[in-house]
Image (cartoon, rainbow, N blue to C red; front, side, top):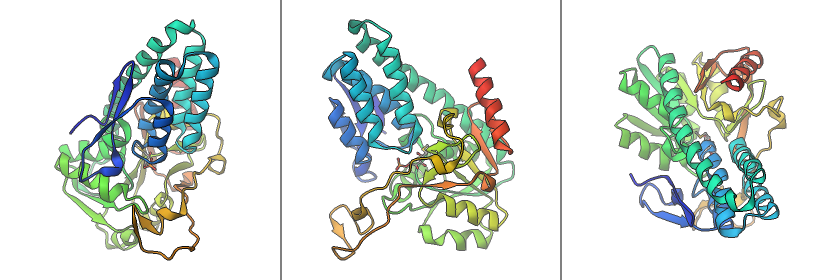
Length: 342
Ligand code: MRU
């Protein structure tokens, strides 16, 4: 596979255009902040951890291409962060990069920002490997898993979070089959996870989102595992729209529901899920796909990109530092203080 995300300092960031997958692997060169914001908004680049990398790299790009002054960089961090409000990593990494840059002389900023983005990419790869291994340890009995949206390399730039766990567990002989929801309306499951699972060699079955209840009731699934876009301090978790209903169904059928995410996805400033900003997207995404329309013009649509799964429905949260068990408020506090001490 061509690289999902590549830094090409000082001119550009190269990304695989995810809107064209699975049929076309096209790398696009992004050469300024406006182009990056367009790519993020259109979901050419997406997935919470990869958006974190994009946020950091966006500041590097801004310093090289748009200008390295305090004003230039503060503006860049603001517009990049505003592009998608739910995934905490985007604003977090853009903000960290800004802070780093503002502490330096103007002529040193671009170099330091490119180096920071490269370091973050390395961290991402190491953290994903750890998440995959800790998560695979949880799936002790051989069985099938259900996942939602896309959480593989396309979403992180590393091995992935939930999909990383599934691939690692499959390699250990613990996953028989991965059930993949199509993830309407933008089909991240049908287009991206289906593609990544097949390329990894994991036996995979695609289902309409509406078939999840029937699948769980059939007893075919032994665990549900998803990623996260922002986790509150009490464990409430925002993830792709449809995650909440999967967690509720999993509870109804006594199937464990796991969230896999780096610790950076836990927002220390967010006490509970109802504080998480939920991105509302264009209603036209519901009434068609690309140029193909199936709903009459003029119909209104409800199109939140994410929902919040209450902590009480989550069995455990898998991070690069280990597995956080309920009660999450205490577990998250402990994990964050251990991380601070590292
Ligand atoms: O709108 P998207 O495609 O960026 O949404 C992505 C998700 O919801 C993922 O599940 C989440 O970011 C976790 S990525 C490892």
